[in-house]
Amino acid sequence: MKRLLPILFLALGLGSAQAQLSSFATIPVEINADQTSFESGLAVAKNNVVIHHGETVVYCDYAQYNPDTHDVLVLGNVRIYRNGQLFTGDRAVYNLETKKLTAADFKADIYPEAAEADTITSLGPPGAYRVTNGIFTTSDNSKPDYYLHAKGARIYEGDRIILTDVSVYVGRTPIMWYPYVYQSLNKNQGFTVIPGYTSEFGAYLRGKYTFPITQDIGATFNLDLMSKRGVGLGLKSIWGGGDTKDTTEWGRFRAYFVHDSDSSLNTTSLARETVPSQRYRISLQDRTYLSEDIYSSININKLSDARFLQDFVPGEFRTDPNPDNMVSLTKWNEDYAITLTGRKGLNNFFDSTDRLPELAFDGKIRPLFGDSGLNYVADASVGEYRRSFAKDSLFPSYQTFRADAFLQIEYPRTYFGWLSVVPSVGIRETYYNSTGQFFETPTTKDETLGDGTTVAAGTNVPVLFKGGSTARTVFNADLQSSFKISKAWEQVQSRSLGLDGLRNVIQPYFDLSYVVTSKNPNDLLQFDRINPSTQRAPIDFPEFNSVDAIENWAILRLGVNNRFQTRRDNQTINWLEINTYFDINFQRPQFEDLFLTRQLTTATSSAKTALR
Image (cartoon, rainbow, N blue to C red; front, side, top):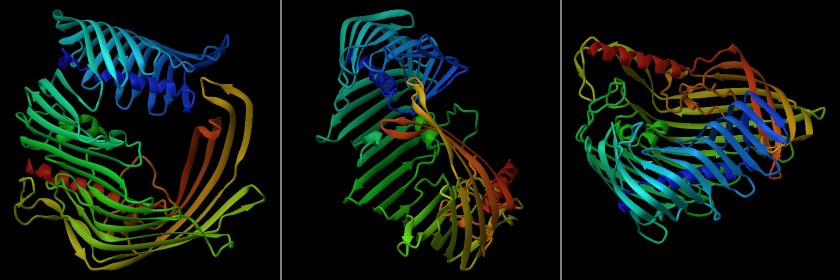
C-alpha cells in the first residue's frame, strides 16, 4: 500500500498554509473589503474580503481578529492562492500566539494531486496536524475515478504521515482496506508511485525513487508510464538551497526524456508546429562563490522543441516559456560590479539575444572631488552581440561588436530645508562595427525557411540591408525636484491590519528629461531594446538601459507619490503606496524598436498568410 500513497503533497500543502498564517503578525498584510469595522472588541471585515500577505492571496466572505485570544477567523468561500497552489475551505481559525490551526471542509489542489478533509487541526508539535475523513486522489475529474479515504490521519511535516482505517475506492466501489498505513516523508530517500488520469497523458503511473549521492546532495530518478504519451525517464539533483534558492550558494540539475507516442496531441485552441516524437529537456542552474566578492552563475536549458514545457511542465511554461542560456562571472563590492557574461541561444526555435561574450562595468553613485557636492555614476560595456531569430522566422539574424560608455554627473541640493533639487547631465558614447536596417522586399524566387516552409516568389519579406561601422553620441540633461509633507497618527493600532501607528507621506515631484542623440535608432542594430510592456519606460539615466533604442525626447513628468507607513519589527515599512503621474511630451519618443517589432510581426503574418 505504501507505493499507492501519493500524499506527500498534502503535507507540503499544509506546510504552506501554516506558513501563510504563522507569520501573519510579522509580514505586512493588506486587507480589503466592502465593509470594515470594530464590533465588541473584534476587528471585522465583511463582503468580498481580499487579504494579500506576501505571495499569498486569501479570498473569503468574512474575516475577524480577536486581540484578546489572538485568533484569526475566516469564513465563507475561503480560497487561498500561494505559489500556483489552491486551497479552499468553508472556515478556518488560526491563533497567532499558539500557532494552532483548525480548518473545516478543507480542499487542496496541488497539480496533479488533490485532497480534501472534513477537519484539519494542529497537534502539539510544530508542523503536526490531525485530519479527519481525508480523501486523496490524482484524478482530475470533478467526481474522482479513484481515491483513498482515511477516517483518520496524522501528518508530521517533513517526517511521516500515518493513516488509519484506509479504504481504496475505484468509482464508488471499495476494493481494498487497510487498518493502518505508515509513510515516511524523508525527501532524501524513498520510493513513491502516483497513479492518475488526465486528458493530456491518459492513464499514467509516475514512479519516483529518491536517494542520497553525498551527505549534502540528493537525487531523484523518475519513471513515468503514460498511456497517451509513452514512457518518460528523468533525473533530478539539487544541492545548497536547491529549488528554493534561499541560500547564498545553490544548484539544480534536471534531465527528462520521453518517447512521445502522440506528439501531435494539442489540448489548446491554438495551432502549433510539428513536434518531434523524441522529446527531452536538460537544465542546469548553479551559483557558486569563488571568494567573498566573486561568484559564478550558470543557467543552461536545452529543450527538444518549443512545446516541451507546455506539454510536460506547464507550471514552468506559464512563468518562463523561453528559458535562458547563460554563464557569468561577477566581482562585486559596495562601489561597483564587473560581470563577464556569455549568453547563447541553444534552442533555435526561440528568438534570442546572444552575448559572445560581454564584459560590463556597473558603477554606483560616488562623490566627485571630495566634498564638492558633486556625484558621478559610470557604466560601460563591451562585447560581441548577435540577435538570432527562430528557425521558422522570415527575418535574418544579425551580429555586431559594440562598445558603450556612459558618465553622468549629479548635483543634489536641498533648499529651504525641505525642497530637493537634483540637476544632472550625462554623456554616452557607443561604437558599432556594423549597422543595418530592415525593409520589406518581395522575393525573386521560392525561399525555404528553417522549419521547411516554403515562401512563394513575390511574397514581401523583411530583408536586412547592412551598413558600415558607426559611432553614436548621446547627451542627456535632467532636472528632478520634490518635497514631502507628512502627518502621523500614533493612535492608529490594528493587529488585523498590521498597523502600529500610521504615517502619511505625500511627495509631489516633477522630472524634466531632455535627450539628444546623433543617430536614429532605426539605423542601428537592436540588441538592448525596448520591449512591449504595460509599464512606461523610465526617462532617467542610467535607469533607462535600452542602449540601442535611445532617441531624441523632451519629457516633463509630473506626479505625486502617496505613501502610508507603519512600524513592523522595529522598522518603518510602506503599508500602502500609490504613485500617480502623467507625462507632457514636448518631443515624444517613438522607440523605433516597437515600430520595428510591429513591422516585422506584420510582415511575418502577411508572408505566412500568403503561403496558405
